Image (cartoon, rainbow, N blue to C red; front, top):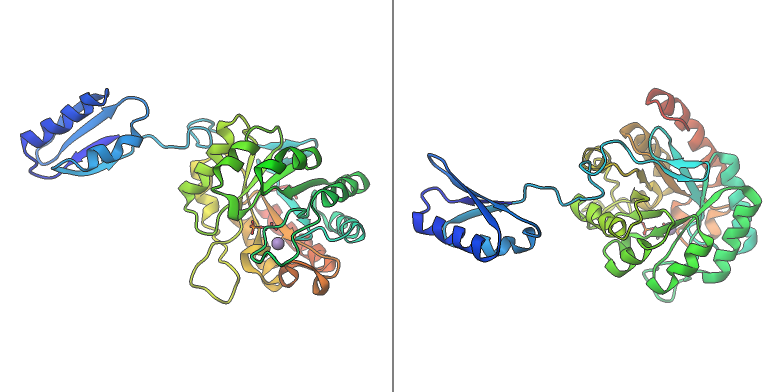
Length: 337
Ligand code: PEP
Ligand code: MN
């Protein structure tokens, strides 16, 4: 961390900063320029004390110089992480497609959807057993019974399965059934939950909160990784903006930025991102072109009768056509689909 003094800060002001640094048990490194004086603060755990320096007279700014992404950052690992769930890989040169209904509604619905997304080209089946709904009166999910159906669908199709866990108390249960634990957008900053999934040996699909900065997004991943679980897949699912034509705004800029900052794979969810099935395919193509590592797409055998997120769910034939349309793009950007 560097303390930048205001132009013309007095010697006394500089002395006071140096004194405070010493008082707090850090080492100071003073550099007096013609116009500016800057003071390096050396030692562990100093960022928490940023404000103790920022309030001193004559201090213009306190700047962080080491990146806070200890485990998710490029400093920790220079290559790109590939997360392996047996033979299914996420990251690297792979482009991985997760698809399925928003919610698991019945055994028939899930098994049908599973077969359909498999035929269409997905490697991973999605489906919520615990649903974070805006209204407590909406369908909340089949919970444990839903998890059992998910395991059955995996058995039948050979697809891997991803499902959301919302509560720390359910992490053990969901981890028994799921290949990948999903942490939803609304829980991206639920620190106890992040810590709990960080204790499991299951990869975690971490969705970006609709208000999160890139830093907050990576710091949430950091919580999971700090517990020892380094298998984190990031997922951009749209943020809230002033655009009211779509449910959210898919921020594709996140892909090159995260690529620069982190080694973790990042996928795009254009279903929640747009809220309308019509826009899912164009955004999916853009996601591949911009360098994302995969997609999460909502597909329902009968979207008009879906219990959750029907308007953004693709019919199975549309999903199949989406995957077909991705192929030339995958070839152009050297990704295996
Ligand atoms: C979901 O994937 O079904 C879901 C609820 O997503 P999000 O957390 O992104 O809203
Ligand atoms: Mn949904």
